[in-house]
Image (tube, rainbow, N blue to C red; front, side):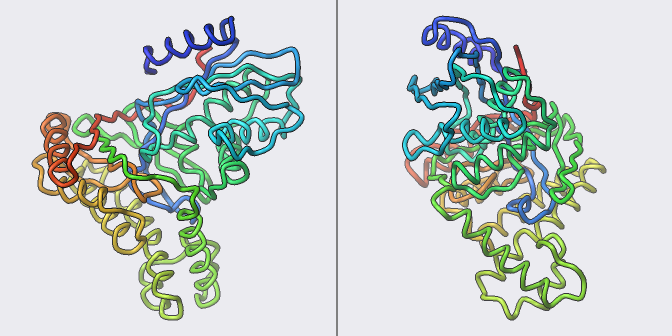
Length: 389
């Protein structure tokens, strides 16, 4: 279910700005990454979920090749020509839409420009992938507007290419696939080698809390790209020393890592251990979910965060404080950072009956350490992106 208040506000803003109703409206949710951190570009496994926070994109055709895009929260408009879609160094939020439009145009050339506006309720910089949600709702809306039909994986890859070529972040496919493939009450388990995905029931005895620390979360500053480069360096090393094909770190076991890591720089070896261990945790987590073992699944989430903190070094003081507090709160089953890291949010697994008390305890523990509480919201695995009109 979409947030009707946000939807109605978008339509109101669109009418006021463009003087007409949009021809098409699409919606895409953000996502939480539940287990499997930085494994997508290592061709590994991830558990994620689309969430009950998202972004709307409304659009109508123009008679010219001019494209007019408005950020609904800022009510700021940028314009560009359909024949010259280039990345911008100012108002960089437009690059996610520009890159997506360029990808669609590679499938079928649009005949005219558009009047577009996006508006949503995903907290920016929270690690919930507001950028992928924008790409996916823009892709669905503009695809509908121009009669450009692509499948789920193709649209996800168009969004990924927008990140690479227009936003400067060499991300994997996790965020886009999660936004598109989500289902209410279910986790999405994705194999990023085959890009095959399936859903797994979370069950009525569990929900998530999103703890937004508001700590800095800016992956395009190069930190994400450096971590990815370390993983690629390690994969190339293991491809030389192991006696079986190694295309990515997904092909390396923890036992092999322990034996053959010695010729890698210590930092590179440690960073490689993180996605290798995460793959094993995701596969183990699938077994535990199938048995209904939520405490066991939650323990893997705690292990995942510790690996992020110690080996991958993509956590920070604020995220660690939330996870440490979560370990001491009755009813909390697991907690870990969600997303690229370096700030943003922690995702916490709790029983629904304990959600309110755990939320208060987490906010208070954070305030005691940093002087102000973190924002805590109940997260429900939700349906994926879709065209509404």
